[in-house]
Image 1 (cartoon, helix red, strand yellow):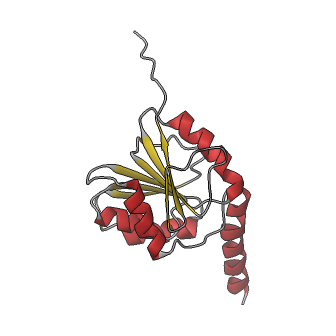
Image 2: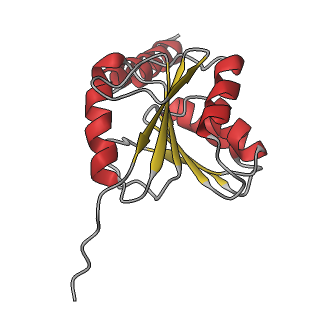
Length: 169
């Protein structure tokens, strides 16, 4: 009986602890996954970054479209589930960790299903992290003050031009 209590506490810590820095786990619905990939309009070999990849559903769909995919997940249980689900795709990777603190790899597209309170912070992080043109696809929640390029099925597309890079001689 004690092991059930320990397991229950571990699950509560894993899922509730994530709420302090991110959104609760809510799976992305299949129609929205399809809409997100259509809006991102990435070509095989391009890279999609998923911030808060949950169970890996979007990563799998993107990997099946021959995209390079990297998903970040803070919850260790969900990160493990996502890793198990995507491990057969050689161009898919799951990172267990806080994407706010990570140095993101170069990406052509970013997918998020974040709580609205984090969208303005995300906007700043994208500007900070990306030197190239990148597309942001957000399910359900908008970026405050940012122009929506296109909307489909509750999924919003934004574009970022990137920032100039200074090369020191």
